[in-house]
Length: 67
Image (cartoon, rainbow, N blue to C red):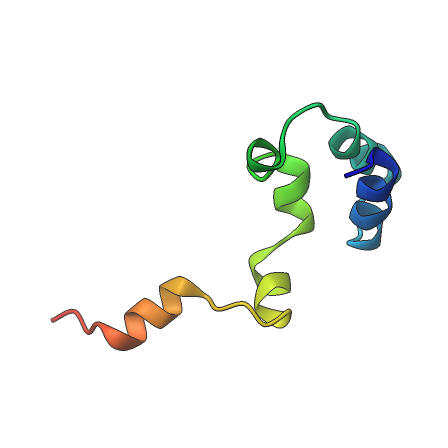
């Protein structure tokens, strides 16, 4: 919730300090910040898959075969 915690976590994900500040000190809510560029660059698809989340596109394609 706190901006300094957001900044620390974004920097832990590999964002430079200026970009982490840009995302951390924003007044936008969580839902709106999810579409912000700084968050998209920090939480890449590969990083989420490595964390244990499913890739929905791959899961859908493995179940549904298009002819």
